[in-house]
Image: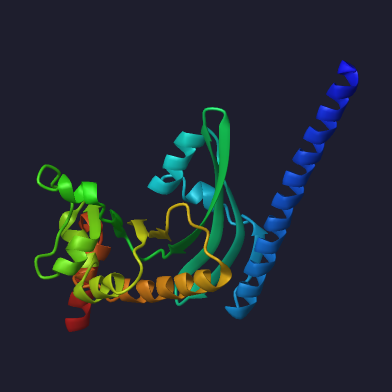
Length: 251
């Protein structure tokens, strides 16, 4: 009798596991189809897997370092849309990782936008919605970069960066107004890379389209930044060359 009970239990367990796997595979397939349709709408090439080495490129961003610490292993990038906007290569993709807490494991998928522009030289910065506890600690933590002329932006976002003067020039008034008027987003910038995401949130196709279009508009505004000479010449690496070109023009 005990043997029969064991067999029945094993059969039920196997059936449940099979059902879970089938359901997950069905969701993965449906998601892939939705993103393929979005790619067609945006006239953007689609790749089911990360054929661009994105995970390796993005490994130093806070988002990917944080999840790697929790996992102890790499996440996965899937459903990649890519499009060239002027000289900027833009990607929209799903990033999936697993969080382990004791005996439980939770699979999380979130939508990410990524832009690569070789002429940017953005300062290293991070922007995120300002939480209540960050507001409470503001008198002790002075890392948040605020703008006296833009109290709405300063109240809504927590902005940090290594080169404060360059970060301020990057977030010019028009860019601030754009971000304030739209749902809060996390941004990370570093040299010629820019990343945008909403933590632990996989956007449906319609939401992903709006997210992607807003991201492309944000890229346009970034290229309208004030003090462009100072920003592009991070650490004044190119100042001499620019001055030489100006001298040539006036000679």
